[in-house]
Amino acid sequence: MKATLTAVARKYISPSQRYEIRHLASKVREVMARACFWRWEVARFRLQQESPYEILYIGRKQQREMAKLLIAGKGQGSAAIVDSARATAVASHVVLVSEMPTSGALSVPHYLSAVVPLGRALEDITARYDSELRRSIRKNRPLYQMRQALSDDEIAMADRDLLRPYASARQGIHAAQFPTDEVFRIAKGVGRLDLITLGDEVIGCHLGCEVVRGGKRYWSTLRFGYCEAVFADAKKLREVNSITTFMALEWA
Image 1: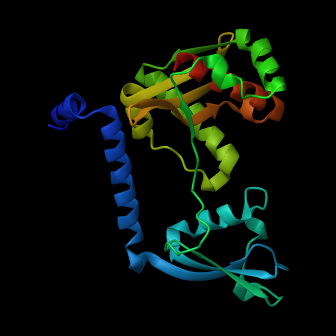
Image 2: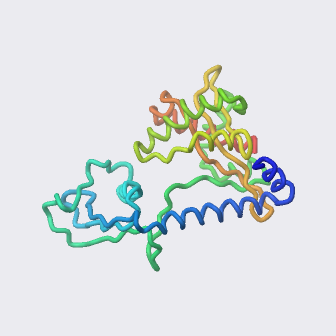
Image 3: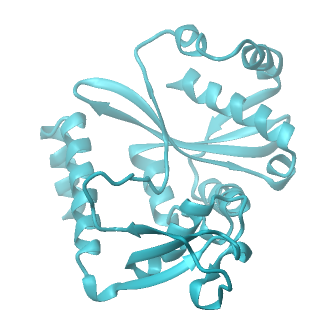
């Protein structure tokens, strides 16, 4: 039944309209989740023992750690965050952080994804890159290859060995991991999962999809994934990441 409804929707509803419907449904789910006020809490903490700023958090308990990460940044680390009850210095300023939309407040997204307008020559897109990055791409592009992951084994491997380890290495326990079934859904239906190879070795992957908004095509990068040998080396990661993005645009 679900497959039939999906086929009918794809036949009679344009890609742009389907995107807007998915976007609206996602916003409705988020609003409904926030509306469960019995799951909210009021908590106080500071990012540093000696910080003059005390954070007053009002929101869902399970989102408190995400709020701390967004405020402190990855470099701070959770060890630097202390509860106000254990703080020795008196805070001179209180900063309110809440999931409740407030007029004039700074809104901070949980995550960002790259969306590139298509329908242009690849040279026009890369023309905005700095000269050093363009030279690096020209030099290293012949060394790498990209192929689509089609089999269940390849998709599972990319999820297990590339996407999840890289996200964990970047964000730690706060990593927003894509559910495995969602990776499969995108890879086998609405988008692509491409494996990046250097020689015969798979060293990374790229999960993305084409989005149509208002009749215009865009390429949306959802996730990158890399093996430890790549993400543990900052220089190598920059090189492979730029090549991966370039190859995704080549295909798109």
